[in-house]
Picture 1: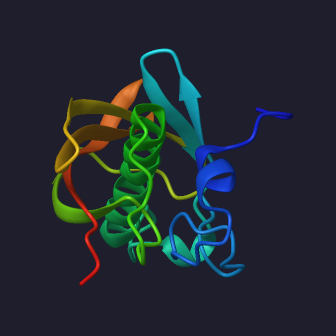
Picture 2: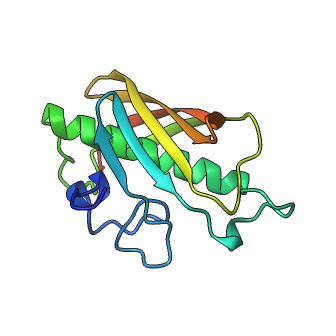
Length: 151
């Protein structure tokens, strides 16, 4: 998607999150894009993401699902005019992530991430997010995000 700015770069370019922060040079630096029907991204694993038997590590899968769902939530919040509250780096934070591993994900090929906001209210959002490869869902999750209210 050359010439199009990712959700992460547009909404939170200074974030240092390991998965989606573009200010973290050692992180995954996901780039998620708004498309009709949701948010999409490509992710290419690195050799150090090996699960020990030649596939993508489950913890890395959970991280990219969480961080890709963040892009969906932040884009939705931006559309609805729900910016981060004073003192918060983002408008929402992960409150829960229910990951289901369905089949192995490759370590040496790009995978696709897809996310759709299922429920959106200012207090909480729920996102369905999945990791795809070769036309099959390899892992899926339901992510629950709550409004970040700094104390």
